[in-house]
Length: 331
Image (cartoon, rainbow, N blue to C red):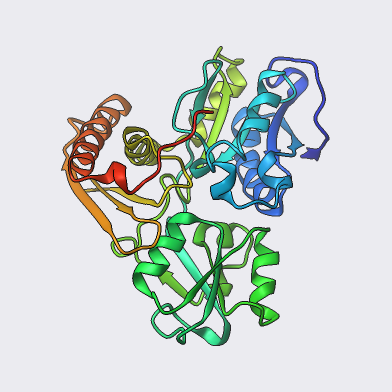
């Protein structure tokens, strides 16, 4: 597997035995893309070339809320894919806009990792044992709202930067703790930094958190690429994240909105729970529903996801969710 800067000139995936994989250049993005790329290479019997792409979210130090959240990490990757600089791109699924792109399709959704948020605190502290006035860093409006709801006596500090930078602020004493995605910590080999893993039934996370998305151009690629996509796709993950993302789409809320949503499949039921928070954490609306897929086929799982998401959205909007979660800016 080799690395490369982006280059122009379209070619069919796998031509010459090489599949070019676009990715953000951050340590986390490179780590998670490398893991997927190794699986793609094995399935396609091809070499993989990583194509690092710099996004607006990587260069701006502004808060995610002020940037609009949705699309700031995905737009440049999509542009590189459409220009033919790579054959596919790997996103953190929670960063991907819910609306479909005219020229692209979701080629595969690999099996999801841990969807929980992790508190990484000094001295092994947990959310419950943080002292009054503790300073907790996060760049997510959802996490800020949840933190204010759970611990109104601690201080939420807006924070950007990569995982090492954020953890470093705890090590230096600048912050008492930071909130991060457990999946990202695991992919970087830093799972031991978590001092408290927050349960999804109490602390739902972003739609698609813990999952990756492989996006390709809408026209079908060569057989090697399509075979590789089929090999890494996980139908149960695809259906649960579809349900979660349909909630965001139905609420017209971006990925930076204070919305937590969790879907999972247990026995024959697809369960979906979504919570919408006010920015200050003082208000929360929650809706939970379940659907029974007719089978485990991709089509039936998708139908169940749409059904349960529609009922959750209808209930949330009927209870006033639109007044709590700001609508997504058009991309």
